[in-house]
Image 1 (cartoon, rainbow, N blue to C red):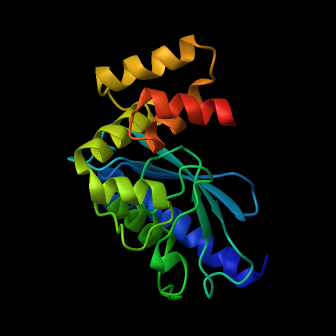
Image 2 (image 1 turned 90 degrees about the vertical axis):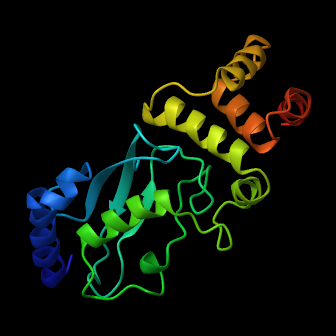
Length: 200
């Protein structure tokens, strides 16, 4: 990795560790390898959102051309959000694409991702199924996002009705993650979710 990128990311890594703002917002960063090309981030779900109480792991890859190009970031923890793929964890956020500026830092990226959890942009979605649910049935979206937060990010328990539906399909022999995805994408209708599971 180019020397400028290494020096810069080392400085920013320390900045995140020392920042009061990041510790107050429960944002962390760790090294994956010693040469600073890959980091692991963690953000807490913001208060008053369906993600509250959850902890979300991020994969952060630093390109050789950093800081002139943005880091490549994706969610490792599964999440139900219009701007984050429920399958791959890919993120749709302008500063990680064409709105990146060399003056931005690792701290900016982590705080922006946490802010994205609190303010979705359904008109610029990464996950069309989630975005449709967000726009057409906000209560169901919140319950679904809360359930995913509970199952995958360790947030407090959510809707007992949704949990019963998951248990019902798991008892039929389907794998839990597949059941959650099917029910989430089929508006929690057990019959159409079962059809989807059988067709796969």
